[in-house]
Image (cartoon, rainbow, N blue to C red; front, side):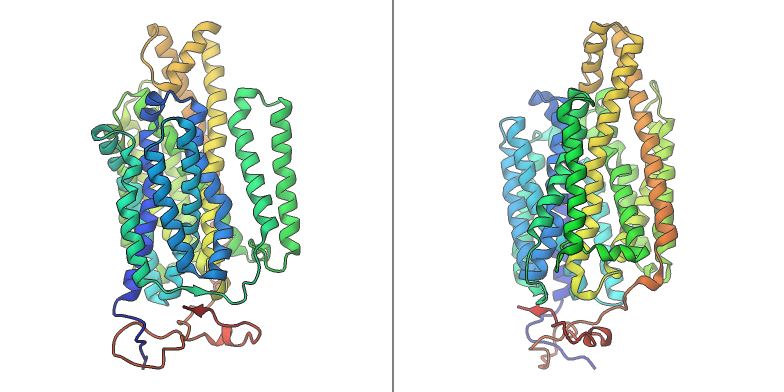
Length: 534
């Protein structure tokens, strides 16, 4: 019979789950809200196409760069402390985005949002892992996956309503009350669990990883503007390769690396990492361009465009709920690989879109890809936590989300480079140089001035660029599906852990959660101290 701790009030795990889902909802809904508002921000702040890419990538770049370090900080100082820090910073940065007077301030505030988002992303799954065990953990992860889905689902709708009704600034102001409520709830309910074995931070790894990712994204975004043979672009991309190589060397020789490269010896870890990166780049990296297509090319308002994305986003919410009672019975590789394969098919169906097609041409692709994402999200979370030792779930949560957000940042930058190159080549093939320059502006910014020939050429060029992105994105997601199905294996999973025994767990008050007790496998590691709880 289990005993209960006076420090564990009734329903504490549920309150922890609610706090984590609140933070996750806030930072993910912000991504889809921003995407819907991009065309409006472009017109109001006179932003270039590159500026729009940086609105997405400034956030995603900092987020991906700091997730691993945030995970290491969480293991060292406690997951609750890092989570609360992240929510507070994200909330403050959202306010700064809302009061931004120009694109420069908005982009830098988005980068600050990434600092807070990294702390939340790195600790979210770890907080669930420390309070839920066995079948309860699978159900909690399903609810977390559903939160990811509903954030994606309602984001375009909320973004459209706020942008049209109150103005684009309110897509950021809406985070402020959610952030304050999440801080109050987490402060009351979440325990601060840390790993005593975490004694030092991997500063070299942080600098090299962040530098490599920044140089890569910077080179991809500026390559079309400056030219791919420009010495600056060549030097930047070469620097990214050198920094990434140095990062691998440093991590292999660091006693407490923030990125444990030995995990790649487990095929399941490699498979879920490739699959997570693929869906981040292939599907989520494509969404900003679908938004531009709906608003700039088809002429829909932000609300009308957001409504037309609901067939995809609603399924991202519904499917994880339908799967929540079946996760433990389904083979993890089959579920993840199958979900990614369905997503790849959905992305490929977007190829039905043509220069003169209406939004309904998007419908089959949106429905099928939404189904696949809904299958993939809980499978990614379950596998990402299951293939690492219990004491390093902070790192596991960070790694999973690093690949997802790193994929998004790389995808947005790479697809933007490909899109602009196809746009220019298509326009120059149809129009003389002066007309092509104006038509490029029409296609990129959704303007309606110009001769009918220029507007028609811009529409055809946009559709051509979008089709090329969709084809490449479908191949990327399909590659992730193959890797996941072939490499994710149940035997690589660690046994489900029981809760860790706290100093006060011997007292019984008749209320609270089950006490924490180490698994037999963990106890056998005599050199490892159990995670501390404060």
